[in-house]
Amino acid sequence: MRFNEIGQQLRAHRMESGLKAEEIAARLGVSRAALYRYEKGEVIKLDTVKRLAELLKISPLTLLGIGVEYYNRPIGYIERIRQIEETADQILQVYGPFSYLVSTDQFDNVLAQAFEEVADQAGTERPMARAAAEQVLSTLSSRKRMYASRKPSIIAILPPATVRKFLADGVAGALPLSDRLRAVCREAAQREMEQVADLMESEPIGLQLGLVAGGDPNGPFTLLRARERATLAVNPFATDAGPAAATGVAMITGADDAVAAHQRVAENTWRDAIKGRVAAEQIREMIIAARRV
Image (cartoon, rainbow, N blue to C red):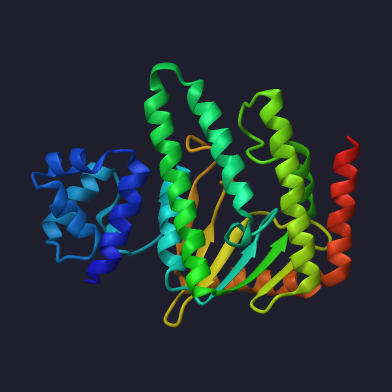
């Protein structure tokens, strides 16, 4: 057994469950410190794995890293992607409207404002809502810091329909926000896409952005490649989805046939994608159109 991988799965599914570390430790009959050591890759008995799986309502095989992983809350998926990105050398993204790892700090700031406003509407559940928002924001920030230190190569293929929707709705478009903050979110979305256009035009080393040509792909997915393995992540959650978003079930797998099938789709989509200055001009035209509304 690879105990570090069991620890990663444990942490992601603990966050997915919404249970606090002390709650799981108490039910398991161990200290919170012991649970954290398991998450960091300390040796763990198979019987303990089985008991943890029961508490988290998942299969023991999932904790052992065997088969497909499923997540129905954004935080579990985001944490698991953060872990995989720690060793990824190449990230190939087929969804949009941008690549979070190279997004602006302003995006994070405006997203935090949106989460805070929604949490303030939660009444007696406000502390819990704020804690969930902070957990998501912290994990996203950790991903961005990791990218800045490691700089894996990124290819991101963005569907135009997703870009237009992002510009129309703004950051956190699915959340119920005040008119004032919604206007701020729309402005932030426009500035984010302006950066995307600039990056398309400048084509920095290790970063390639393009627009899907023709029809949009059926589903958003990411391929993450490390030296020894490749991972497919199918994600129904937008980067700016709220912590309580229930828009589907995310799936992560290292199955060779699944990876290969999606790799073929990604290669064909990238081959036909609109790139460089032409893509940048199309993005800027979308921004202008959004400002006219």
